[in-house]
Amino acid sequence: MLVSFGIKDVIDILLVAYFLYQTYKLMKSSGTLVIFGGLVSVIVVWVLVSQVLEMRLMGAILDKFISVGFIVIVILFQDDIRRFLVALGSNRGWKFLVKFFSRKGEDPVSQYMAVIMACLNLAKTKTGALIVIQKEIDLTTYIQSGEMFSAEVNARLIENIFFKNSPLHDGAMIIVQNQIKAAACILPVAQNAGIPKEMGLRHRSGLGMSKETDAIVIIVSEERGTITVAHSGIITKPLSAENLREILSGEQEVKIYS
Image 1 (cartoon, helix red, strand yellow):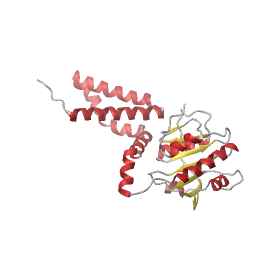
Image 2 (cartoon, rainbow, N blue to C red):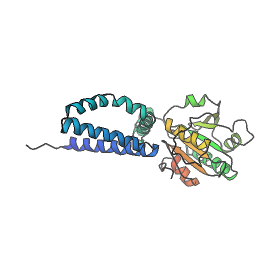
Image 3 (cartoon, one colour):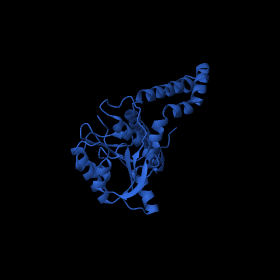
Image 4 (spheres, helix red, strand yellow):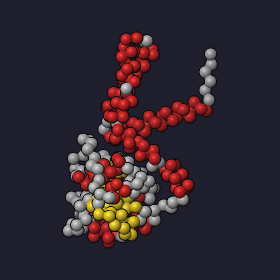
């Protein structure tokens, strides 16, 4: 008996392959790949025992285990599932559709240049900074955790806010559509044990924020005078001004820290 194989089957296989690849990337970046591999092994054993070998007793036991497996997966991978949904929602294709129907323009280039100039000057003087640029996910909760105000993005203003004697330098600045909305904001701290030891609290906060939202987080190191970016749960190596501009404008993706 011949099995029909059409375009629908090809699309089905490609979608499954894409889903597995994206899942692998998320698990690898979060350090939970071993746990995920263990779950896959359990599923494979369950299929062999209950479907192929038809072992009734073991099959019944594994059936009960698999029936509650979804809840177990949600508990174990709640952070990774959140990151997957954020990555899905922040995909360029979806962003295009959202902007098309909402008719929102892209952030002005002047915003990027002001932020880049400020970060370069802060890095030269080894002044620590944490700058969050909102994308599609609303950051009102984090904005309300700091000192709220509204001002046009300006390089000198950013430098003054992060000046060591400034009352607002300790915490994060949040920028929304070319407007500085708040400073001294509190961000979630990443707790992943696999984070390199050289990363301080500022980097961990930036990484934690990138896991919770689709925002782009710029971190200026106070110890080394380097500029890094956190996005979608990963953090870059130290960047040049051109690399930073390309990331902010969407011309370059954030590469994993190594």
